[in-house]
Length: 207
Image (tube, rainbow, N blue to C red; front, side, top):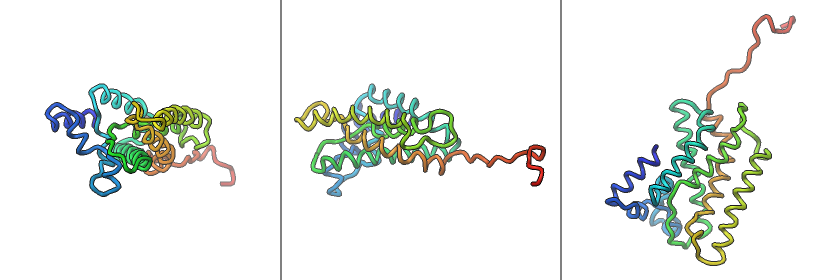
């Protein structure tokens, strides 16, 4: 819901247009590296249209739910929020590192959502912990995600196209960050599971 509220504020700031807030709070690589601006933590809450906002909200709810179940309560909410920000920041840094002189402005939560995709894969299946980085499911979905974004990268390298504003670098960076952070975040912010202690009647006779 924060994404929807942020888009409403974005429209309010721009008098009905999302562009003024995007220009102010979006991530521009050249401005980031020159120190003239940042947007590294704010660009993830900006969107270019109502349709993009609705899609971002839907994907966040669907992909974030399996991970959120591992981190209940206020502590878990803070953990999920920081995870979202850090995956977005990692994706933003990947985008800015690839084109450090670019004036293109990156907006949208797709990098953070990519991180949630990785987290959802590693926490799927009802297990207590998280799946290893070498799990077949993570490698398969990560491979598909990499190939899809590599295709966008290939068309971008050939010349400026619609994929120049696709932010494929951010998607890859966000996914990798999510895959790496989900384990530590689950331990830091997740529900504490007490160790199993057998009842007296089930203990060894000599214990």
